[in-house]
Image 1 (cartoon, rainbow, N blue to C red):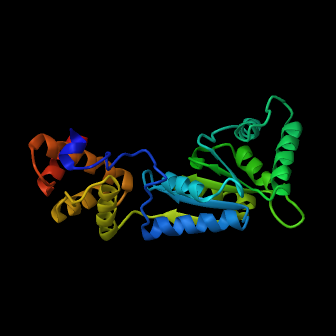
Image 2 (spheres, rainbow, N blue to C red; image 1 turned 30 degrees about the vertical axis):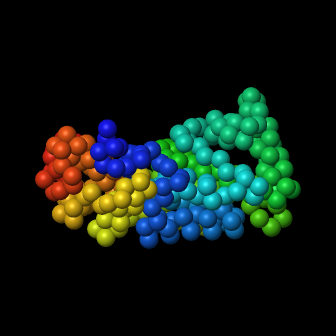
Image 3 (cartoon, one colour; image 1 turned 90 degrees about the vertical axis):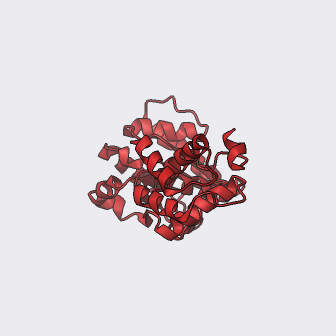
Length: 265
């Protein structure tokens, strides 16, 4: 009923990251270009930071879709809050390798062999860590740095991508050896009002809508509430559409947005 009422083919404001729905705001586009440059040119470590809901995971999944399997072996670890030994095991398991040994030397040897195998097949290895700000063990972060010691004669055998909230910046700043290995970094800022408007229209169009649905006054109210954070925009827009359906309105105005905000609080 929700979809038919608003004339869309799917919910426009779902919060599950979708690589096929990538809004190319100036900052999201720059984040993508920087990460793509880092992995294509084997820059060692790339770091992407941003507030909760700013679109970091969406950028990462869009990046994954750009890297063809015949040239890149891309793996993503979503929960990297592990000790050094468990981290190496988690990496090996992601690559489909045996991780039963209790010896870090043996495990690192296995990982090095896998990286060399990719290198010999002209495949670049990329390992991304989502929610990297939750890594509190300095030994784990140092282990990541040590992975960059796995090199050919002229390049790194692996590119690391660290994705996390702003506390990651403070953590890295206190680890000079790792900080100096970061070749590319970028911080995702919130959308401004113009791009908030473009984002809402983009999501509606991607879902099959043929009209804007939200009034200009409603979009200003959404921006004021969300402060340009895509996750918050999705939440308030989705709730506004539900309330608009229940009220039988044909458009979403600022009054409905206000009701939605109260409903979310």
